[in-house]
Length: 295
Image 1 (cartoon, one colour):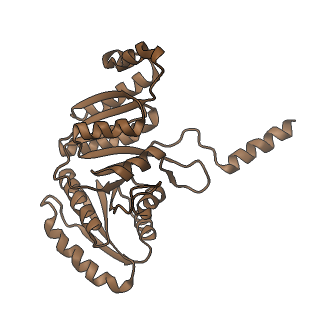
Image 2: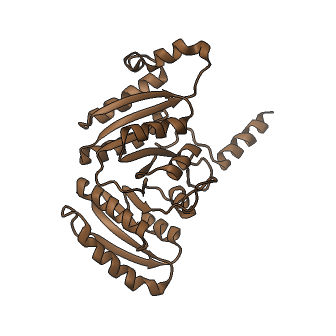
Image 3: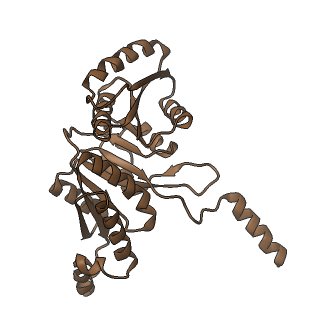
């Protein structure tokens, strides 16, 4: 596994180095420390700070590479991930506000949307990574995210909880709720949700991970953080999907953004699998033209 850890030498960058180093040590991963200086004059002191931070990395991390550049942070991370292949990118973040759509540095969200590898946003102080909470929509496209989570959890010796939240139905459907919350019954059913959750659970268990599945009803964000507080998780996994347009980027849904806003532990924004029916503007225009030819 190859991990890119991004740091600007500030406290948020130190947190990214600490969390990324912990994960790299558990996975015995090859890491690159990318120093991001916005001004050329800051490159030398930043390199020295990163060199000093190597002393805090686990002994299992062998010969980390240091790269330092100056300029726009998003462009630097995009250039590095385009030039080299990484399995995971770790970034730090600061909370700027507690209202509105974006509570943290705007660059945090822009990095997630711009680069191809999954992004681990290092927040909070977690001395270990032993309990993972996976927010699953119960669909097939989350499979790639579940697989990545499984690899990390297996390396860390962590357990995983698959959490699926449904909207609260009217009282007249209370019996339906009870049946959905009967996990054994749901996982053995032929419903799309049951089949996908069973597959995700089996995939994680095949890696030797202890897995729980939880079904909740209500407001999704409320239920996610109710479970996060109850379970004292060290990592929350949320998803992002690839855009369908001609400009390739990743779409971070409202739920993922809100989790990032409020989380007090690291958040892994995992990529969904490739779109099987993606259509860009040129394909759409071609089909429209072909249809008019037949009119």
